[in-house]
Image (tube, rainbow, N blue to C red):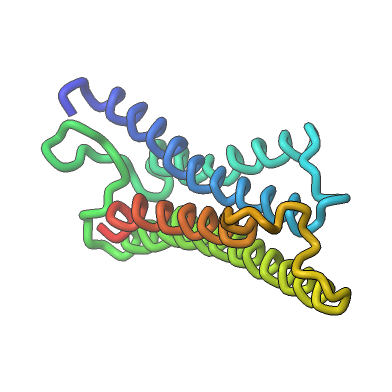
Length: 181
């Protein structure tokens, strides 16, 4: 890293907080959407809940940013063409492999699993709700319980399913290449 050792450490620290923080923030957003949609009366996001989520993200990311900076576990090193700094993932000793495996699990697998779980639960809940509405409409001998059923717009069910799949796909597509390397 052309700016020196300290600049490399700061660059990697900021990158760690940004990357891990972003993945956990996406998981928290998925959780919030899950609570809001599946529990509309008690799942609203309050200022306190938002604050707790923000603090959680920072606390979750801190060990993975600070431990390598102070070389307690892992370390930051220049990577690629020595234009950026990140975790040392090239050293082949057991400790480094354990660190890389741990950070892969906590920074990629856990947030991805949470995102997929919460969005799949949202889709499942919406599908079951739509099914219940169709069954009730059938019992009442009406075509639909929706006021705008004549419109040819896609249903909320389909829009939510598409949005959930898009979020899951984009998370996996954007983080998998970096996480696997």
